Length: 196
Image (cartoon, rainbow, N blue to C red; front, side, top):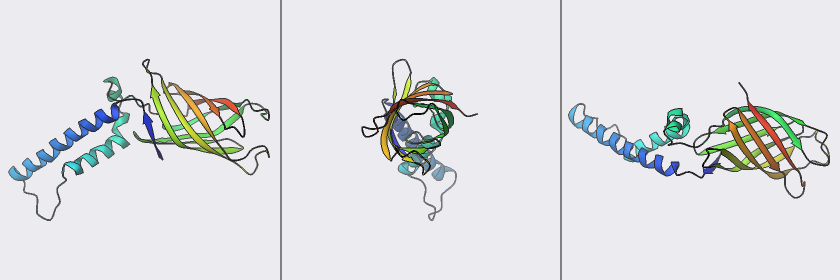
């Protein structure tokens, strides 16, 4: 997976809160070891940095997805991980009509993402991405991808880079537009529905 950015201050704010919580946990452990149970010398107690690392990992992997954090406005990053299905429409002169998307899979944490798309003729992987959330809470993903044609693909296809802008309509629907580079000069769109 690779990093992605978002046009929100949430990373700064959450990092601050996690640092405060790490300080409190380290202080609480110190009080506990002094008053209740003395930690043996051969056990290394987590420091503030240790607690912060643990908290950050838990938040990055799991806690950022919690709906309550969205309701209070702390997190705006949309959760798009999972398997999707859909149809791709190419405006290329070589297009023969709509193309079934065999697989569209997103792996995502709060700070990393990887987007994979496969059709009958090619597959692509994202290598950089960003997200934006506007004042109306409309979220978009912008990503760059590398596409590799399969052996069975037409001769007009070859390896190329492209870009996608995907609008998240709701938690079950994404509408996207793509551009596949000057050498292919191909634009198109695809619609996705979340797999149940």
